Image 1 (cartoon, rainbow, N blue to C red):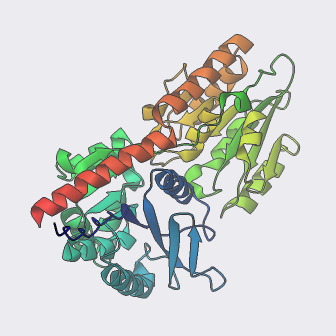
Image 2 (tube, rainbow, N blue to C red):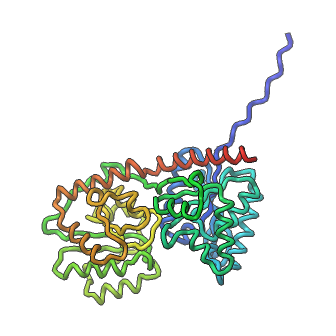
Image 3 (spheres, rainbow, N blue to C red):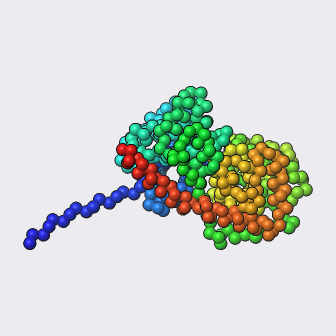
Length: 402
């Protein structure tokens, strides 16, 4: 009997491949979006997903291409950040050409285009994705007065047109807070296109965040870490801290760098806070600082969902935060942290005073509630799994349309 010829081996399906498009990226910017995207890439890798990060390269010294595990970073050279527009429109147009060409030439390698922040840089990705039949997922960065699509719409040069392209051509949107979801609905985005996915945080092992409150005569230690930029309202943070009084046993540590750094140092010195307000440069081991702090403080006027807030809570550092986008989604006031209204200086000082009056038992309960919230609802591995599920569903929708 003549043996049957062997069948060719079945093709091995390639891994899911995501293109992540950002307006800035490490090492040229160290903001929350960049850090969150890096963490998500690493978590997606653990799930067998390949990721290509596409970002502008503003500095000649920045590498054009890097590979880290299953993540590849490709940088496209432009003179200015492509989300600015206005007098920097030439950089946006050059970015559009380079990004569109990359997405076209590599179209057989990737499955979904995931854009971080719905600003001007996202427009060419949305156009290319629609022309190429690729699902386009846009994660909004902020809500309220700083809502991404509102910022785009208000651009003097083509703002309404670009905003309409984003809303019409994008397959779906990620809202990491109720405020952003409400903003999307308010401009007519259907519920079926809005997906509530929070930011994720790397939750440290319980043993590494074990801590004992050091109240009872010792200075209470408040900590801020992040960008020193105007929307963070750090001048209010410092003035409110000064209002506690010179005899108050408390210390404020501000970690980071940004446009307001020199101004904030001058303000602290003019208020006589030398030694009580300490400035430190950015650090890689923020966990060590959080373990040494009693409270994390944020006076921000605008956020999407604060990565610093999630990171502080993951280490069991109770937050004192202004009620901006995402805060009510994370903090239960009086249980896992303290909340005040943005721009409310008296409310901020009252929150600081309340924090300093907590007993060790009350502080421990708040610390544990903060850590439990981060672990149960915002762990990055769980958030990454939800993203993979969403990518897969968007691909099915794209196939059905095709």
